[in-house]
Length: 438
Image 1: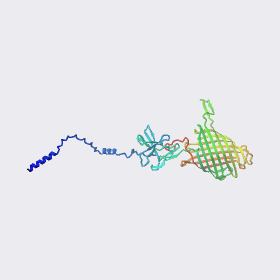
Image 2 (image 1 turned 60 degrees about the vertical axis):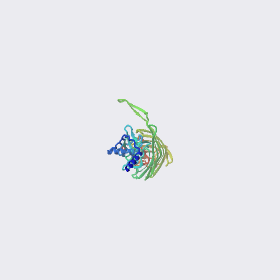
Image 3 (image 1 turned 120 degrees about the vertical axis):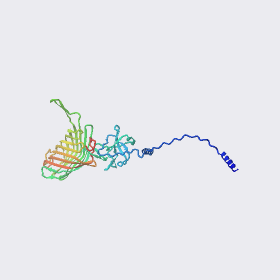
Image 4 (image 1 turned 120 degrees about the horizontal axis):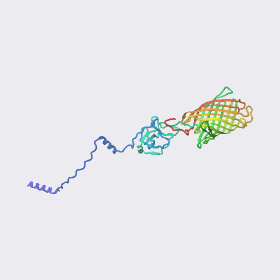
């Protein structure tokens, strides 16, 4: 009875449960790709998944003394590279050659003695108005270089610039010298010092022309027999003619032609004052104006150096005796710059003057005469803040008989000193610097 009841209960329970349909077998899923087990491949895969910390990890060295130099005539591009210990700003100046696919790259800031960037920007460089993208620079070979410098200037491997070419015809000068004097009539010596200053200007005109001007040219002699000589303005115009003045043909052997040129110019002096002291005699002269015609016997191609003659009249005031005179003069003189950088400069000259229309003065001739000789040499010794300091050597001789109650005779002076030029730019034909002073 009990067994029948259990059997009936199980049958009722199974009747309430649904029998599931047969499951349809599904296609097996594709197995995932196996990750490479090789270590370098794993590292490369992980690196590609991570963002790059730096777009371009180039480490460019700073230039040295043997590095090439950029040209001042080519375009300069601003270039920003990844920072380095020497150039943490990453700022460079680039000049690129498209054909060679090469860029000369220089730091945009000066470097210290250890080759590290300072806070001082490069001096005397052109501004880089265009930017070179770093992505474009990857296509070029980058060569460390020294930044450009203008003509007459030199830049070292640290980016510092210095001037090595000077024009002594364009400057403001102040100098001093020991200037003793000897008189032939006396066996003594006048111990004097000279203080001189002036402004020299020079500029080219039309082709084959040159203008030169000197302002406030002054020499003060202090000590025994103090005196002075000063000129307010001196102007000099020189030219070179294309057509010869006349032609000379010789017929000894093969006919030959010689062209003779007349390279004429004009020389003007305004307000030249002179005080003369000889023993106890003192005289003052004031030349109101002088006009001379000049003829070059030789000159350099740029007309700066020359050997010439000049002649013309001067209206002079004899301030000691109170009358005007006419003083014709003639001179042979030279002005030579001996090197292309303007370091060596030579002056020489001989001038003769005759005093006319003078009133009779007791103790001197009616028509006095003067003869002046001079030879000088100036060489630049060093520069302070690119302003040259030069050594000057000068020898002078003067013969005159225009001083009343003073015997006619020679006086000689030997002068040696220093001269400081406050402004002396590079010469107009100054060369480019390639590796140092030329």
